[in-house]
Image 1 (cartoon, rainbow, N blue to C red):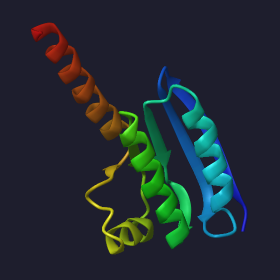
Image 2 (tube, helix red, strand yellow):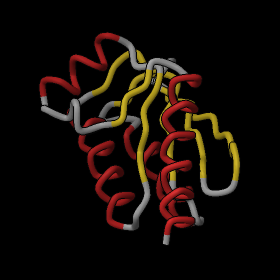
Image 3 (cartoon, rainbow, N blue to C red):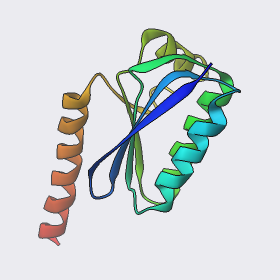
Length: 127
């Protein structure tokens, strides 16, 4: 099965990848390559919009966990939005939830990002 990946550069330091199709052993490498390209830039927040993903294998889940660890190590963050119920269940089975930042939609993600950024600004002005 084919996997297509949309890329949206929302603002400096934030990119949304929107895979469409199955993330499995046949397609995982394509997503991994795209993630690596994005992480070569100064991306601090990577968002995976999972609205178009209908299946994820253990290899795909492992890639997401690896991506999260890589971003965390460099002070960044991984967020996931629009997760289909079957994909959410796969994350639950391998105990990635609630460790992942999962959002119902873009509005919920934006609200979270706004809170995080305000907290940083407030901390800097208090110092």
